[in-house]
Amino acid sequence: MISKGYSLIELMVVVAIVGIIAAIAYPGYQGYIRDTYQAQAVSDLKVCALALDRYFSNDFSYEDADTNNVCTLVSPANATGAAIKYNLTYQSLTSSNYVIRATPVGGSCGGLCIELSADGSQITL
Image (cartoon, rainbow, N blue to C red; front, side):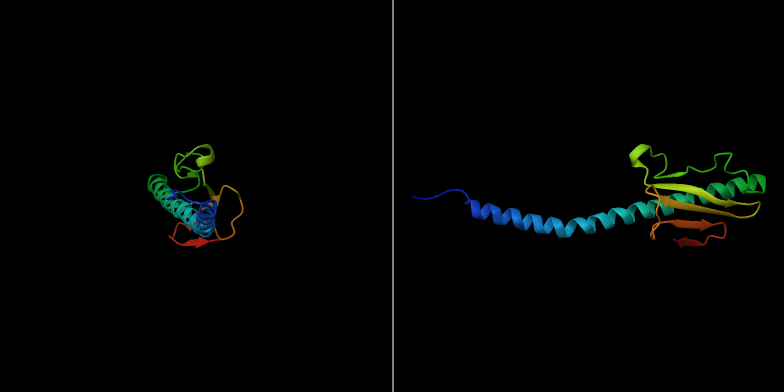
């Protein structure tokens, strides 16, 4: 008699192998997603910096940029609700300088916050 199909042991071995592969791959995937959102936040910071520079070319000051809604202060831009991954904030706006920061929605930096200054310097906090 020829048996067709798989035994329970064979199926359990396959499930165990798939589980091990998933356990190894998942942390790498999470890191990839985190890095992607951080790169998007850097891009949105640079877009905000360009908007601030355009504002400066018209008014010769950065001081009132926050009240005039110069930048989209979420990343990804135009995201709402749970889709927002980073909040952008003005750390300082003076007549000739600005510092803007991207902070993860969770609030803690832990190497994930990025600051961009008017001189183009970018630091990770």
